[in-house]
Length: 523
Image (cartoon, rainbow, N blue to C red):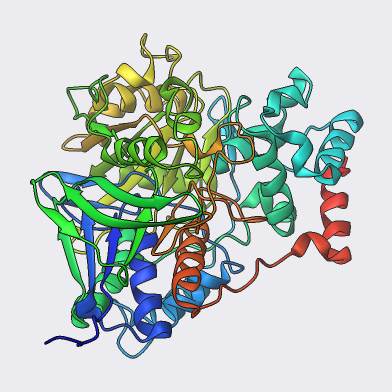
């Protein structure tokens, strides 16, 4: 009818944790009805990088889990209002806390060298290297633009226990952003005393898809939110000037053109760390050529069309510097799991990432709490591993990890653990699924101001940006909290509701700083 007010519709590009969180904040805090929210994603299922799928026959695959800790205040604020998919009557957030009380974790074996536990108590830092770390924390971020970690520290730093544990825990490389390492040092300095034992890090009951994404998707679906998978957004028409602009339409790969009214709102997830991923098998390596990269294609198109939307090539232009290979193992036998418990001193699920220090691939693996997937066969084991230096030939397999089959990855792992004579028996029937992700650490590349756009760019009237490639001062990428905070920033910018909870600044706590100093200077 003429004069009838248009009810604003809310469109979201991508169905990772950022978009799902934004939809929840819109419903919970801004009073938006779920039926007015439409989410597009090119992938066959929601979840983005927090995925996990498979079955007992084919095997299970996970592309890794993001680190979790109690100071992820926006994430817990969200999950505390989402019912748990595992425990009746409690929230997903409380389920995580309860699980970490039930299964108390502290690694007794963070490093392995020559098939034995390596010393962990001494970080191996020289006085000059400790001073360099302190100087980095005190240097204003603006002075670090475009600089790499390698430009700050001497070469010996990258062979210390500190760097091996730090880099494998967070996936840093020497050529990554010095500014981002500074943020990590300040953001997680309260975890430094537990670095060697991975204390203070929280785990989820199952993989992060089952524990985080599934309950959130169920909650949104129950409220009428439309999540359209297999729907690629190929373009967004931006009209107006740089000082006053809006999105007028979204183009889908199917040929559909979705008109966007001035009152409607669009929230776009920029880029994707798991775009282009390829997969192998026991007998085939993951293909070298990357798969489709629709998230990067869309960001490039947006940046060309309108100013102030960031510089995607800064992050996706050198995949040889941002990728690594992982593999997920599903095995019906228990001997290997039992051996790792004896070797590390940790019951399965109570340890954490174990790095083989003398591995050419710098291979790390983690034995999850079992079952790691809903529906996993009783008595089976699922574990995950990755190599931070997978471009180098292995020590037992004469090819880079990037080119290895699943069986060859197991051969390399067993070689380092002196289990070559047990491999055929212990891994009989195991499903090994390699995965190569060319952009998995792309958010860590050195950057300059403006490379990451603000959640609401200047002049943006009806759209906002989310995800790992927007600028959020003080917070750190490659975390669930960064995506959730970016979503909340976007919702708040467009609606005035759901103001983000500030970053917990433990780097301003004198007691925290004193404890960290004692760890660094410990003999």
